[in-house]
Length: 178
Image 1 (tube, one colour):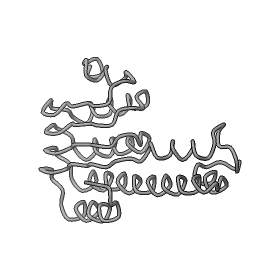
Image 2 (tube, one colour; image 1 turned 60 degrees about the vertical axis):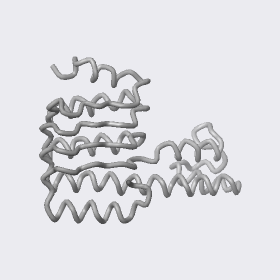
Image 3 (tube, helix red, strand yellow; image 1 turned 45 degrees about the vertical axis):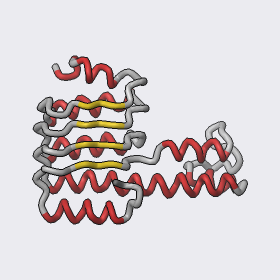
Image 4 (tube, one colour; image 1 turned 60 degrees about the horizontal axis):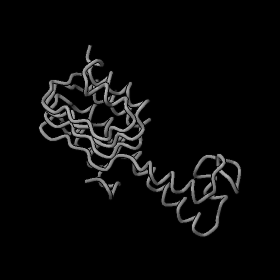
C-alpha cells in the first residue's frame, strides 16, 4: 500500500513542505493517493515525482489536486509518460495560478487604498468591511499566499503539438512561471 510508505505518510504532516520521490517509479495510482493527502497538508509547496510511470490520467488527477491546493509552487513531472491531455490539464493549473495572482494583486492594492468593497468581491464576500472575520488587508495578505504554481517542469515527457501549444499559451500569460 503506497499510502503507508513513510514519505507519503509525512505529507499528511502539516509541517512537510517538500516531497521528492523522483525515480521512485511513482505511477497514476500512487499519485491519486498523494493527491488525497493534499487535503490534509496546506503547507506543501514542492512536489517532485519525476522519472516515474505517470501517464495522462495521473497528470489530470494531479492537476485537479493542485487546483484545490494553491500553495504548491513547484511541480516536477519530467521523464514521465505524460501526453497532450495531461499537459493541457497542467496548463489549466498554470492559468489558474495567473488568475490567483491577479486577484491577490487587486485585493492588495484595494486594501492599501482602503477600498474594502473591492477586496470583499475578490475574496468572494458580500460584506464590504470585514471578510470572514478579517480586515481587508488581512484578506489581501491571505489571497497573496495562495498564488499557485510558479515552476512546472515537464521535460522528457511525451507531449505533442496540442499539449505544447496549451502550455505555451499558459506560460505566455503567466509572467511569474519559470
